[in-house]
View (spheres, rainbow over the protein chains, first blue to last red):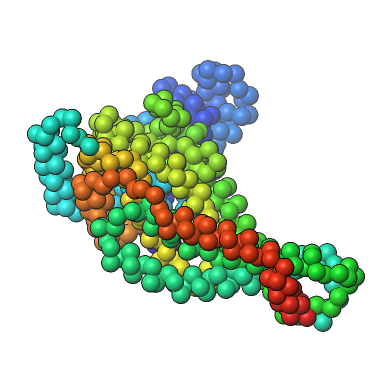
Length: 144
Length: 327
């Protein structure tokens, strides 16, 4: 219906388990698989955590080095850096061209990821303020 | 000529007559569309009742479905009533081609509905996995997305959910947030996501250049209509909603500059105009619309037309048409 330019690829979203594993690594720093398993609040299989760490490495969120025949994983970005990179990307992906966002049935208040004319926004704000002042100056019972 | 049994003939008849009616409806709608759009363009922001315009535009775009359905039901009724022989009959290639086209158009429509429903469900699942729930007064809980960019939306069809981004939640005053939520609830009450689903699924049969502008105008006016539904003729609510729109626009422009996102021109230069139009309309608050006499008239006309279809004389005439179409 309407044309979109293709967005920059957003940083990967995290699933619930990936989020918990990342929390451990952000809190503890570099860990091997066994250390992550021990730090998780719920008991999980070693292989499940290993697969999750491998997936996070492939997503580019972790670095890894081999120490004593086992990989030691460390976060590539600090939590603050990751959150900063994610800021705006999730909402931006809403308006993007990639499915499912493009075909999903969503009503927006305003497709706000836009470059609006600052002068126009100032003018409209001024007009709203004038109307508000007029309304406040009028009889409070006559607001409708 | 190919020999067809009673039931295959019945199915093919349904598909072929549906397609013929749909095609005729599409042609009529494509002729009427430019005129209707010119009229709405002329009215501009002075348009008195956007809710009525939205209904007419929806009716115009979905008219092919109505005409196709009506013609198919009429022909089917005449076939069931007047077709005596239950044996096989010869059917022409044209008839079979029409039936195939009908099946294709129906399949395309169903596929589009399924794709949109699946996309919405997937999007909501993805959001629900990351978002937290926020209790809302007099409404289902909203999903709060941990994102700095502004978003206030209603997503989904069967169980639509309100979505709010953390950035917007932090930036809006309670009054502005309430105004924005009222706008989204107006969409929910009007079933706008259902209508969006229907609009996105009806094939335009190659006449998209004439019918897509109808969808675009509908999408524009449905926002005006939801704005008015949210304000309900109350000046203070109107002003709150107008300032919510400005805050959203400012946050959106800001998030464009500070994030790595450098795309999107949904309406291109029209975004400014669209925003200005909405704010101007909210500043000139209008009374809620009264009874839509033309709308009621059209609904009664449609019902009368449907009732007339089952008159014996009409059914006989339709049966003649069916005979010509089949053979």
